[in-house]
Image (tube, rainbow, N blue to C red; front, top):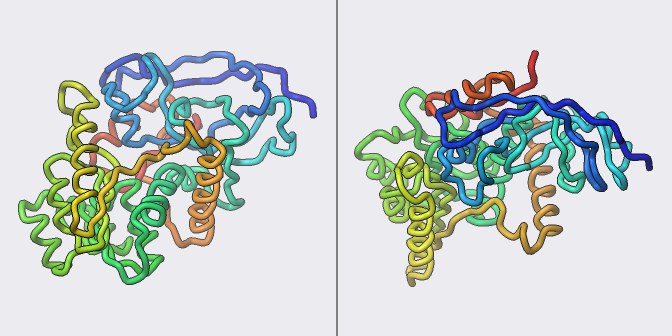
Length: 349
């Protein structure tokens, strides 16, 4: 198989340091030809996740040194292949998780990380469920292991992960109580959850009224002081799944200290003799030591989620589609916490 040797002109959005969203920079450069086992993807859709919001503040665990190109995941079309890669991949669409680098018109990725996107699924729709969908799927089925007839609580049911969790649970016959601001209650109800206002001082009391015997799982991306209340919502045999520390995102000081304290608290709760479980979901768990297993699990889980999108079971929640050159506006909108679903970045018109 012949590799592609020509270079590709790429437009990239650069995070130069700890800046406000308007401090993002746009650059154009020549990408090198893909190496062995690599491909060049032309971006069709990427997006703004909570990770980029943390990276902007220099508070995401293990983020690269500034400056770098953010972008956690994308959907794109293969336009060039390196040695050892099937040329039949060219002009086909794939999803890939990058952690960084996806806010670009073109980028080089490992062919082994590509996951096919079903024909007929819109690129932006598929983008909304790449990391969000895998996260929701794995937390439900690999971590909490919830089942039909269970009751769960989803904090931030209007968000990217939260809205996917609600729909997956509804499809599986699971009752959902979802927190969101009052303006999103109708949308959350339409997704299949019973909404509760997250600003209500009696939030947890209201949830207990809806589930007086406790719930089977709580999915909490907020952390902070409210985590204890999430733990107290569980019935015996229930599981608390924490997957973020949104409450400490804007706090000054060491970014890792709140995370370390969180890990310690979850570990302590997990070992209490009360039949409850607690843990922190880590999307990247096992990648460093079991790369082949990590890739296979990611491919399997994302394929399941994309099939549900293709079948109409999952309705991706797209908050907005914003061109790559306006990534600063996309980031600011996502950070405003006023939207339902995920802000998607698309190529220039």
